[in-house]
Image 1: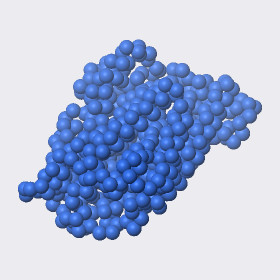
Image 2: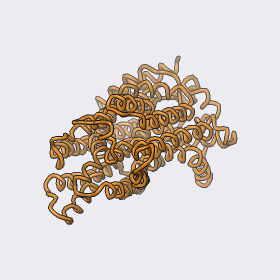
Image 3: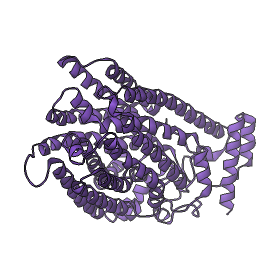
Image 4: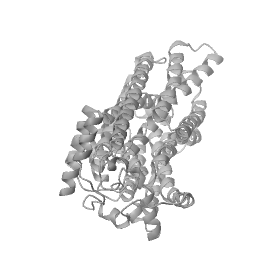
Length: 526
């Protein structure tokens, strides 16, 4: 109880310092904070407390790399393949759009657009319950069960013969698939150090490009099916559905729920894996609900910045993804050429995400990298809006411009990794992750709707909307960087004023489920 009072007092004092900011006020704040030099195990998760030491344990670079290789094998490999499976499953609609599903299901007007939108409306509704569940159940088991369920639903697409039936299965698909990204953000912060998380998120998120490469090739193969009991698009859905079910079963068997529950590691390795992430100061897991962290989440500008970034990136992404086949065929490419060109698109996405993660790792500049990668999106969109398709040369140029537009994906990936690195406090993180993916869903749901059937084939309204998104995205990134720099400077002033807990190299309180604001020793990455 005394500890709770201490940290509540500290939080209020720091908040007050934010308003004042002068050295005299900092000195008064320093004198008012009760010194505390031990772990408050009342705030530490019981499973974590079993393996966490009182203060930081130094782990050699060689040992840390050895542990990371083991984690990559059991955790990262699962995340990468699972995200690939999910992206492949979700992308089947785009490929099937030019394989006959629109004609066979008698889709008219905006009905095709609604088949993408309904997924994200479903995710929007279940996102908070899903995040609440993830905080309280074994993550790997919950993930595996959802993979099996979405594989089953995907296979059922093949039996649909009209728009209402497709809406039902697409909605169910969204409900079961929505576990992926929030679960992966939690797993990334649970298993990996802060400096590793940008690359980790990039590795699994680049599977959006991987599915374009493999999906384009497979879609080309399925497009060759001309006879038999199943049409090409039906065979596509059934094959992917059955493979997803098998993968879900494997995830249940292979993937550990947390470092503390990983039977595949020794007790000493578990302890070291917990210590590896102490320096994150974002906690590891905590199942206790803390109401004050909800209030803090909704008063933190980070929440609204990440929501805006999510909307401004997913609105163009979902529209460009859902209408890729239609836009490219409208440029004059055949169905089979369009399927194969999707492989090039996938390679472009992978290059964008890997290069942005490399730049962040080398130069430690997240927000500047995000802004840099938005610039080509402006250029590509302007070309798509102004250049007419006259001949082979302009057709090739427009296709390249379409690829260039997608550089803004780097901002989306880096934003997600910043959430896992900059938000501490399990309840607060749950709220912000859920809010971010609600915005992610809203953008994805709206994206296909700006591609109006009567505006084809140039889609001026859609691309003009995208330009507005890019402009707002850049402004949001600038503000987020300024805000995080300001918060770090204020905490540095606390350390300079003599508050020991603002410069605690032993990281005594790293696992106490303190929020990033509440912990004066926490520094933001920007």
